[in-house]
Image (tube, rainbow, N blue to C red; front, side, top):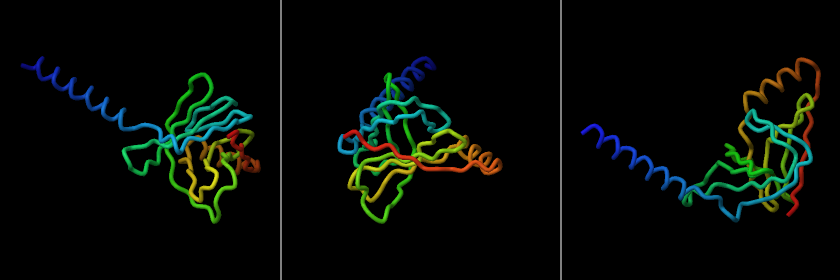
Length: 149
């Protein structure tokens, strides 16, 4: 009896995972591609310079705050974001980085013509680097990488 219950549970879990994966696809309308000429950090992980694509997860019509990032060598990551609003539409597709103590942190993603961008959730590592830089007198600066497309 217990063995049958476990099999039924596992079958249900596999079915649920399949349904979730099928419903969480990247919205092709939201996909942007850009070259990043330097290594950068997202959520505590360092990514190499290279060409990156970003797309919003399409959760069956829901307003997803998650983006998928595709990078060199089949690199993939899910990015948690919040909306950020600009006074005017973005003139071009671009990424915004914050440079802290010589390290770049990806902070925002903007699509050409959009007045709403995606702001990445500040990681604990980034908060720590900012605090340490403030204590040492290092200054923060912002850089951007424009879209190739």
